Length: 200
Image (cartoon, rainbow, N blue to C red; front, side, top):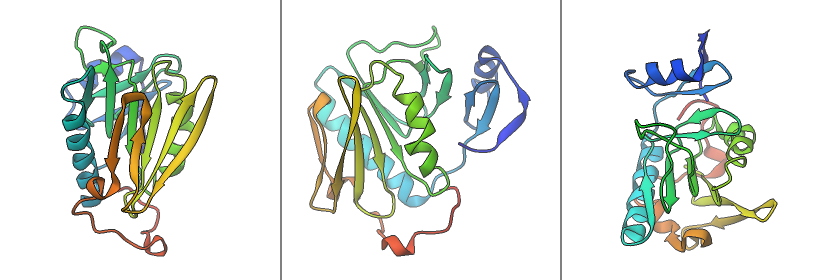
């Protein structure tokens, strides 16, 4: 999440402004947070993921969405733009604009150094309050590694796919994506060579 703007808005005011804004912003508890641009690796992973998801799910009951579709955690009031989302069954939107999804089955975040702690912590706490959510997928952009948080009854479990020979598995939507496919054309780095804390 980026830096908060000085003005405090109602959710309705935020949506009115957001729908005509040139840049996307997230919203929580009266504060609006401008989002930053993405790195080449981040963008490539996001596109690879959406292509793989869209292809595998094309003929089934699930739809795949990119980073332009807003998601709301109704229980907490967070509006955000995940890098990808999937909904299985009938999508439920907040209003007739059909631009704020409230019932994702899967959410995907490609991690950036400046937002990783938030994505793994407080942001996940918001996502966990979405009753329909089955998987929260956290994708490292510097090495072939994906963590999958899965709802298991009243608790969440975490599994990891590590290395180019591994695969991302999402049982709730019957999807398997080789990490080699997910990281196609991405210049991978050694963990020790990760850049300093910055937006990416």
